[in-house]
Length: 501
Ligand SMILES: [Zn+2]
Image 1 (tube, rainbow, N blue to C red):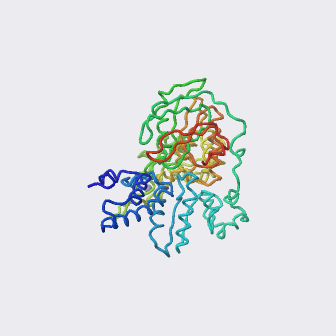
Image 2 (cartoon, rainbow, N blue to C red):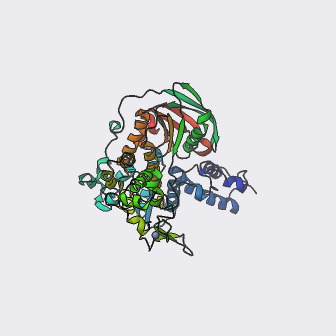
Image 3 (cartoon, rainbow, N blue to C red):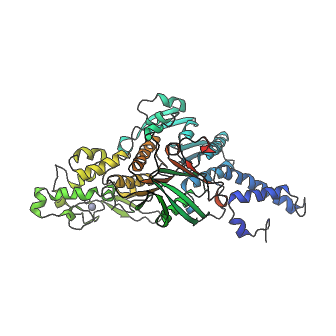
């Protein structure tokens, strides 16, 4: 049984981009038995399907094939897929709530997303989105600005009203970025950087990328851009895997490769900010030097919630106990014995500068900075975290409570706290996703500092500030899915007019 020469499994494996022209062809051509009941039914179905799939293509997700498992679809793609089905549903009186529908969307496709959301509103629905993309924010009718800062410094509604009124709100960081052009000078110095050499990586082959060669300028910040599904992340992974076998020219080289991704820094409450960055090792040493710890012979292990001697026996140092639920995913609740402090009473009798080890873990990065100002290794780690806009996080904040973006910035801060001499290649996949523009600028400034110190940075990005400050741009394309996977442009950056072409 075939349709347009395809059995169902092959049709199901086609990306939407390729299925749509087949449907259109069928509608344009007379059928084998024109005007028969079968022909009419087929036309009706093809027409309906084509107009549905057109919305999917318009929203920049036409590279997805019909049989693609929903678990391998990114969150931005999934949200846009939901928008696509809603647009055609004909429902009205519905409130749609979307969390960053633009995540991973090329600026070229922002217009289509806006048009689809507008369509929902015009049909009599209400759309509420959480968004950092200032182009989308500007196009909204109403804005709710939450702040003023992040974490414990946030949580207040600063403004709720028509978008035009946001500019007049005192203390709104968002207001500064709406309608404000990017000033590259805020992010990097305007001196053009000279590449110290090049790394040529041959034969990158994975998914839709077939035998592609790429040249990475060393000592520069390079951005890989291109429409959704064009193979950007695949190229980035290929660079990471191929760098050791690369051909180096010039004086440049790389001795280490560090991939800074959004994967969690740990999967249980046992890993946290303090343990991951290594600053907790220094803090525990400070506690062993107190008179009471010396008298009792406590070593650094005593102050670890991963070692039996010092931790609370009930929760085994987790501070929380897992609750298994029958029909829902398990959850955690505060330990009834230590009340979340993680330690036993004897350990908590030891105080350093009047604070217990549990008190230290409950400090935010911002509050810990004056406390540890004379302890160099701790102070350096804290300063790196604060620079990346993470001052609101608690030192003991469990890995399970951190977003992907926070995890990524903690990894970057961990790299930044030590001056690396060995020339390093840093690979980042959409580091700005989910960040407020103020934090985007801070993050980019740090990445440019790495290049100033002689390291090489390669990132996949759509963000305008990232593109306009990059030394080098690599664009993937020309299309998405099977029609992508090639490098269509590789050239110096700096506000290229064809950026969004
Ligand atoms: Zn406990």
